[in-house]
Amino acid sequence: MPNWCDDTLRVAGPEDEVQRFKRKANGPIQTYNDFFGGDWVVHDDIRIKAQVKLLPDVGEISKLSFHALVPVPEDYRRFPYDSNRAREVGELVGEERKCGGYEWESANWGVKWGASDVDLLDEESEYLCYKFMTPWGPPVELLNNVSQEFPKLEFTLEYSESGMGFAGQVVWYDGEMQSEEEWTIEEEEEE
Image (cartoon, rainbow, N blue to C red; front, side, top):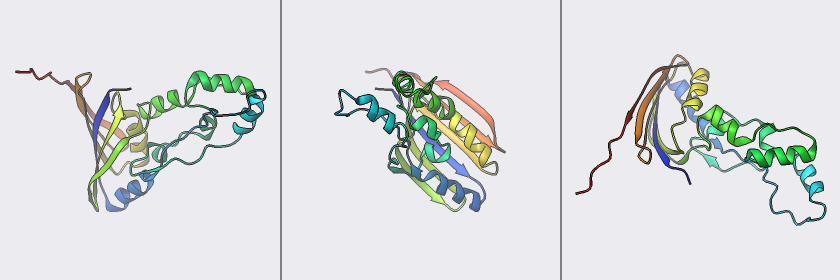
């Protein structure tokens, strides 16, 4: 179980771009083929070879879907999320796998899963404010990617991870990170 990072994302800019971001962000979460639960003990390789050709079912809809914003490629989703399991299945079906969805999400989103407990706190024509949680840290890489697609928008991400004692703020505009600050959260002494 991870330490959870509390995140607040503010999105501001021209109305048409803010609304385009909102529409794109509202989508299904990522899913992967897991290959568990097969009852074919003797010929399980046949089931796996058939299943790896198919994409998994679409995930539930989230107001802030990292997968909708920066999609996990279908080639990763056909295999298990876990890299060791993805390599095992890849070997069985003759498709070499260097990594699974875990590594892809970490590299492209900056976190190993998408947003949890998403809430759209404030919505105006030129402004959105989301509150959500991510495992271990903030989704900086996600916003590095998203800001390039929405260069007219300003993204401000504030985060706090009390388990490891850090917090910060990152701002993107013109498709690039403009500022990044991080500080230590002091432990409160019990009286």
